[in-house]
Length: 185
Image (cartoon, rainbow, N blue to C red; front, side, top):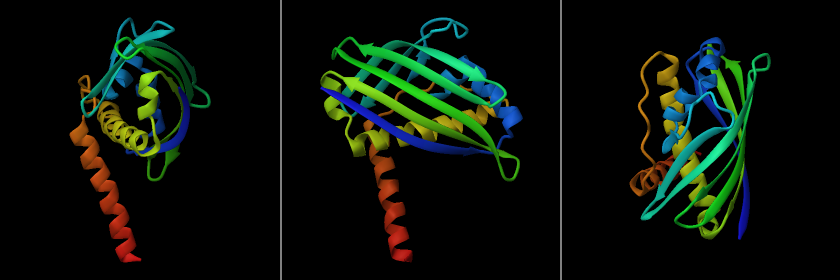
């Protein structure tokens, strides 16, 4: 079974592009900011070797893989092409992240992310709309907060993978926002 998926996201941060771009180019810092990710080799290697652990309830997958990373300093864009496998479930993934950085008012930045990935194997059955949306939204919320801390010079610690309780809380927050918007309308 194979499930191709894509989505676009924007993260607004209170850091100027001139401050944020060097942080985004620091692979070790970006990996520390990403929940469940860890380097499995030197951050300057290309491809970069890394591991990504995702937990959804009792299901836990640990993808080992590699990614080619390219940067365009003039345009402030990056492309990450990677693939990995989870030995326990015999599932594989391939993904591409296209990132662009632009200024926002007042003196902040917008990070635009375009995500594309394919998941094959037993875990592909879990990569359905609402579940993936909740996982991606929670990962991006934590990533944005950690990235903002890194841009201000604060140390970032490796982030633990996401768990079921966080997904439930996130789903409740999304429902509550929709409900309050409907009530206000």
